[in-house]
Structure formats: C-alpha cells, structure tokens
Amino acid sequence: MTKKRSRFLFALFTIILVVLLVATFVNFTYPFSINGRYYTYSSFVSNIKLGEDISDSYRFVYRAELPDSNTASSNYDELKQSTMNSLADIVSSEGYRDVTVSQYSQGEEDYIVVTVGNILTIDDENSIKNLIGNPATISFSMSENIEDSFAGAQDVANVGSGSQYDSSTGETYNYISIEFKDANKIAEATEGGGTLYIFLGDSLAFGNGITIESAITNGYIAINLGSSENADGSTYNPTLEDAKTYANQIRVGLLPLSLTQVDGASITASYGVGSDLLLYIAIIIFVIATFVYLIVKYKEMGLVACFNLLFFITLSMFLLQSIPYVHINFAGIIGIVLAYIVTVESLISILERAKAHYLNDNKLYIAFRLAQKESLARTFMINLLFVVAGFICLFMPSMGIQSFGWAIFVLPFVGVLCSLAIMRLFIKMYLAFNNTDAKKLNFHKGGKNA
Image (cartoon, rainbow, N blue to C red; front, side, top):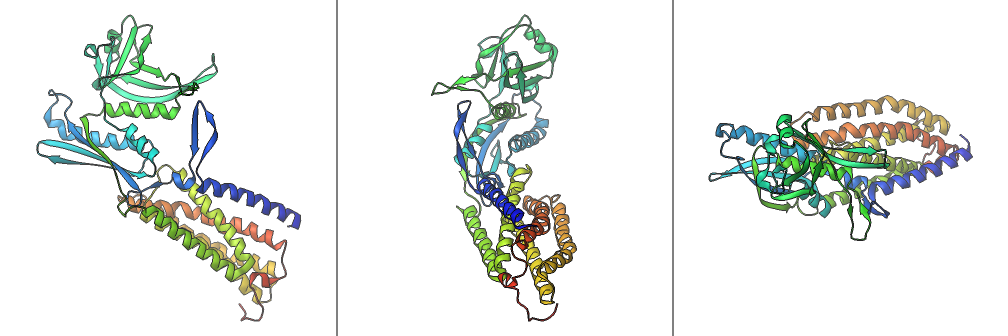
C-alpha cells in the first residue's frame, strides 16, 4: 500500500469514527422543524433499553373488575390472565422490552401491576403514561349521546394503524383502523350514513365525529388522523408513531377486564439512584486503562489498536440499540465487558505474535503477516464459543440471563470484524509509513527466539 493511499484511508476512517462517536454518545435537537415539530436525536447509548436494576422504572397499579355483571365468574381467572398478557404485548410493541406484569388481591378486590423499565427521561415517562394511562372503554354511536351507542369494546375484533398515500394531494395520511366482529350489526346500525361518534370513556374522540356516506358493510373503519394547528400557527400532521400510540390506547380500552388506575409512580433503580451513571463511569475508566496499557506496551501500534477498539465500541452500541429484542441489565453490562476483553485480548495476541516473529529475525511486515495468520483460527474459535453460549442463554427464562446472552451473542461478530478484518487493514496502512523502525512499536532485537 502506498503512503498516499494510506494517508487518504486514515483520514477517511478518522472522519467515519468521529461521526460514529457523535452518533454513539451525543444527543441533540435538530435546528429545523418537520411539520411544526422539533425532533431530538437520541444517541446509540441513549436508545439501548436498560433493565430496572440499573434504570428507573414506572409502575401502574390498576383495580381489575369484570366489565359487566353478566360475564360468567368462572371465566374470571382466564380473563385476568388474558388482560395481563395483552398489557405486556401493548407496552412491548412500543419498544419497552423490560416489562413485568403481576397481580395481587386485597380483600375482595384484585389488582394488576405493570412495571416498565428503562425510564431514562421525562419524555420516556410521559410516553408510557400516554401509552397506558387510565384505560377508557371505546363505544360507537350515531348521535352525540353516548347512551345511544350501538357497539362497544366487546364488538371490536382488532385495532391497528398505518399510512396511506393520497396521489391527488401528494400527501401521506396516517390512520387508525378498527375492525368489528359482526359486520351485519354495524351495517344495520349505520344504514343510510350520517355522522359516527366514537367515545373513549365519556370523552368524544376524533374531533366532532366522522362523516360516513353510507352504511359500513365490511365491518371495517379507517380513520384518518387530521392535521391540527400549532401555537405558532404552523400545521402539525400526526406521524405514524402517533397513530400507533393512539391505536394502543384504544387497545388498552378493549381489554377483557375493566381497569381503573389507582396508582402510578416512578421507581428508583433497584441498584440505587444513578447506578447506570456509576456503571458508565466504571466502564469508561476500564476502557481508558486498556488504552493506556496498549499505548505504553506497543507505542504507535498501540495507538492503532486503540483506534480499532473505538470502532468496536461504536459498532457494538449501534447493534445493541438496533435489535428490538435487546435489553441490557447488570448481567448484560458484564457481557459487554467480556466481549470487549476478548477483542482486546485478540489484538494483544496479534501484536505479541508479531513481536515474537520479529525477534526471530523476520522483517516487520512479514512478522505481522505471520502473526495475523496464526491468530485467525484462535480468534474465530473463541468468538464462536461466545456466540454459541449467548445463543443458549437467549432461551433461558430469566431476563437477566437473556440480557447477558444478547451481549455475548451479538458482540463477538463485531469483535471478529474489528480484530481480524479492520485491524488487518489498519496494520497495512501503518506499515506504509513505517515498516523498518520497530522501536516505534516497542519491538527490540536481542530477546529469546520465538
């Protein structure tokens, strides 16, 4: 590799690394608005879902009751279990993986408790409040009087959300879809068309009602979420995420049991306030210590190894926040540290083997070529064992073991990429500038032969 090409590649990888570091650790608000809303960029680290042992949680407590006196009491336990499962599914659908739903009884009353982990910011807390909140049962009427309703939650089969492109206006509209169990019943109630009023609890939803031209014969309603005017006079169009959240609120109102919220509060992480921050500080100190060791031990090649490890760190954080099923608790942090240690050890193995070959009177570039070739099988085998162990952990019932499993299942792939492929390229780039002066790598002749 020529010096000119090597210089270009070093500059290119430096720019890429700076972008990755910003994307990994920096949160910022975009200086421009979209549909009247200013969006905030959340870094890779901020997007990683944390367990309730190292992050604050939010707890909802609901009093659970049969929706009406005609429901057979023999089905009560089944209805309660179905309600709990549905609550967990609704919260998980919004990306909150650390969800615990439990129950308890007090006197003759039953209560359902929903605990959601990974509450990092006020926005997270508000999102969960809006997602579950105080469930309101949905009802449908052809008049503004809720007492004239012809259908309720028991008549709804499914609630969804989506987007639709209108070619005539060139705009995309987000909508909520409601599917009924009995299409004939709905067709009869809406015969002749008119205005359909939808209530959530006692409140009228979707403005002043929905105009329908004729009877709804297919048992399906699609409701476009209209635009609204912001305080600054700009127009705000609901996003697909808004539609999804709204649909989930309706789904909560469709649960088999009637839920009344009696309590809701933030809960400090089980390991104490700021435990996540303390863990981050400890990890940063550990990473800096490994960087110092590599630089002192291998000088300029230690700097190259540190450059490589920064790619490992940023790419690892990207993967952990990208996979929707990944959540990280204390066990997951240990898994991340182990994967980092394995990658560091792989780099040290390459450098030590190169040093041994150089002491055995090989030229510098030949010493590194032999070292990388010898380290190939060993690095693959160690990381493969981690991947297999992580895959097994993913099937364990404990959320802590699953978290550990995700870390040691995903990160070895990044470790192999960085310690073999990327490091190989970085070594070639470095040797284009220095392939004779081994003292800059802390390699010295005169030691024992390899």
